[in-house]
Image (tube, rainbow, N blue to C red; front, side, top):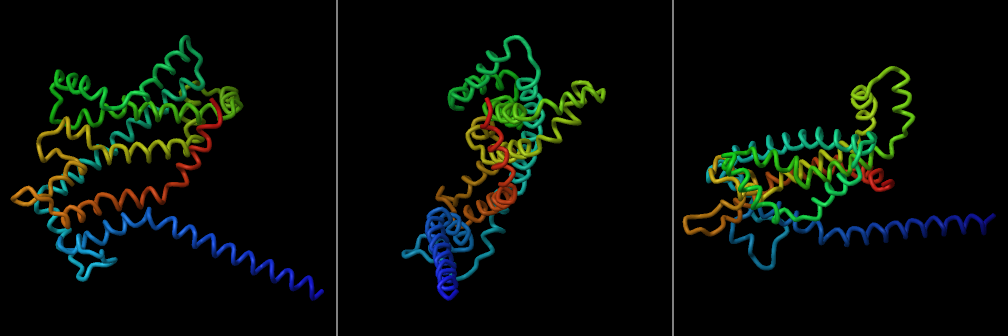
Length: 289
């Protein structure tokens, strides 16, 4: 009995030691990833000279909250924040509508040439945005949509981001049991009824993943606003962050970092809270072609 109890105690101690070692290793591996965020957050409260002091300080010697107030005085930062927010919301809603409808059609509705059309659609993912930016710009110019937010809303929905979202939704719908649709037909539902009352309620993980990834894509977009926008009042946050400069054109690092914190932290918190939905969706999306 004593031998058994000693062996159990040693096994318990060994498990505790293994767990502690594992946590220590994970913390050490997380430091290179978390350090840039920590530096950005703490530097947002520092004076410019303290940001570049060597050796770098983990915390500011004096918490300078004025940096955050200055972000709203150097340019219309609140307007830029609103621009990014409403554009990202519209792009997300539009992408959810188009990708869910298209994904369901490719997954569940047989029609002539569906495989070829889907392959052509996927070929858009092989094309970098820089390749299509010029023809898209000329098209928007012909439509007199330059210096408006319309290209920033329409093009992501119908572009590579929309194609990727359609692919994710199609893969998810392929994994849904066909018995759900058959039971719905027996109950007298037509195709729209099946889609809205049966399919979509079961596609919440995929819809959540598409919504999160699309929102982040639109929120962080820099190239498209740079190409299509000229009026400072129409700027989005990525354009706004590069405009914090002094009279000599030198960056106001402390103000810029304060604005960056305000732009990044809400999205970072939202993503952390919803990351389970993204992982859950990806586990469904790649298991069937």
